[in-house]
Amino acid sequence: MSVVVDSVGREGRLVRRPSADEPDTVTLALPDGSEARVPADWLQEQDGGYRLAVPFEELREPGAPSGATIPVVEETLEVGTEPIEHAVQLRKVVREEEQRITQPLLHEDVEIERVRVDRPVTGAVSAREEGDTLIIPLLEEEIVWHKRLVVREELRIRKRRRVEARELRVSRRREDVIASSGDEKS
Image 1 (cartoon, rainbow, N blue to C red):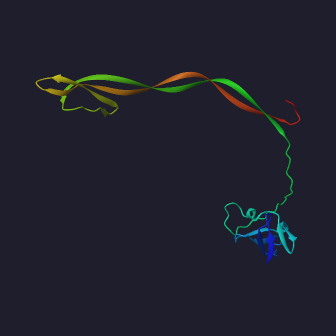
Image 2 (image 1 turned 135 degrees about the horizontal axis):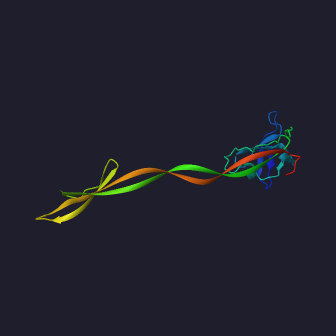
Image 3 (image 1 turned 180 degrees about the vertical axis):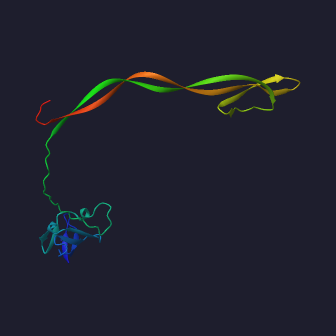
């Protein structure tokens, strides 16, 4: 094994020379016991050994475990042609026209009916629903030989829906495309 000295003077060893599988790559044993693969042309012969132009720390990728290798990248070039298409100019024209539309609108009205009940109760009574009617009891204390809670009346609230047709005037835009050859000037 040949000695390899890095740019800061530390020594490592040349473990594997270029082979038929990897003719441009050598493997180095670094001082920390890890190995790294580098391009063969990174080594320069010197005093019976080799000199490496970079420090050994740069041979490992950040966060890589010991024994990491440096990938050797090769660029390739692809040559080809692309078809050229003739240009066609397109113009958009925005036209505005007025249209009449009829749109149904939904309305909800509330109808409140007061119903006299005069029914004694022993405690608070909660609101309830019967069909589409919400009934809210209104309580009142009345003085008798003893005090008791009486539902005096209830509010019955119903929703009624009605649809009303209204005619509105709205503007509507529409785009048309006009094509012309690339030779014409607009």
